[in-house]
Image (cartoon, rainbow, N blue to C red; front, top):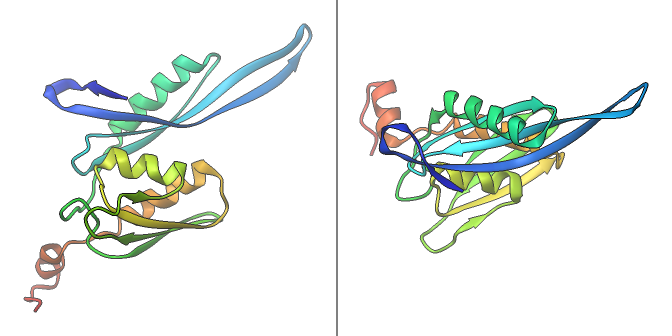
Length: 162
């Protein structure tokens, strides 16, 4: 769902997961909800958020607010990532590989939502270990934070790569 963000940017908001928790009280069960969302600008900035509330809409709203505050810039080259990378969080591992034009996003639901929000058009992914969507999103962000462009590496090392 694309919305108008402040400063004229359009943002992509994706709900990754909604969890229901039940607390047994005197009158029966009291439910609360936790939502995980991914927010991105479609141009290389993306963030994730986790919100809890007694109803679904406020929990999604809280998660979106946290995600937009925690946005990070990722390195993109012509709609794909610069190199293959592996991210890990807990028992979840995600392998991200660059793909040629026209490939599309080959990924599961959790990783796909991160890639679409970030503006990645062509990528191959494989999730290893757990299939928990929250863990996979965190592993994907860990992998995306490792990405470096050729210019970044040259600047950091102080050499020219051929």
